[in-house]
Image 1 (tube, helix red, strand yellow):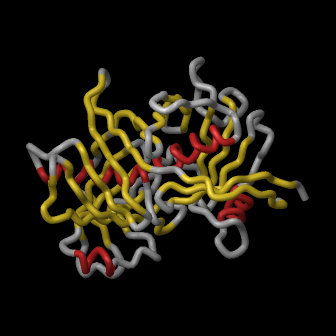
Image 2: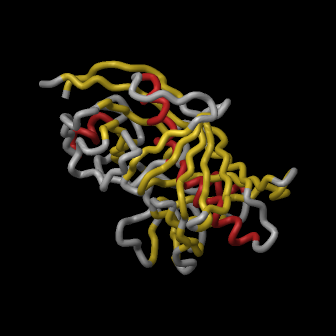
Length: 288
């Protein structure tokens, strides 16, 4: 058996096993990742983040001369995912802890992901990540959720992970939804999708900031306490539903805490930013 050094971290309860692999020498099979993320037989996490220098991993997308690090993100079942909004903040905190990068307050770092290059800024309360352009998909997805009496329409949004957002009628529906089973989507997205259940606060907007609450089922991981790109998708979908005049600043409450979402204009179209905390809990060594 080989030993694997790891760190456990989380962003608003969305937790990860983090591994430093600068030279791309660690090759974890999906079954090994699933065991590491197993909450009974392993460390326990919603996914695994591996820090690899750009160019050291042939499975990574094409790099950029100004980007040093690739974030290899795997779901809890070992499957590959494009990006993780909470994960990229925790990943950045991990780089700083390991001495692999420096980032003064207010400065930014570019991180390569399978969803493209993301820019992360260090803030007084954590990190804010520019997730780039978002894409509106079909608004004609039927979503069946266990514990919700009727099939609901969903709004598809990519940021860049695929999401389908569903609005629920009241607090009881949000609390009573059973996300131990994956929601059923019709038509099913080719690569699957995370599903967000959203309940707007009343009033929706206070002091120019819109407020929603959210639960999420993540493909490959099940229900999690938080999903960063899911919070972004939920805010974008609710802004679509709210219509003209809806604000660009959003506060999204998830079971694990609160995330900030902001939409802003950029040269290549509208971008979306996700802000929130990143906590590194402990480090250790495990045999694989």
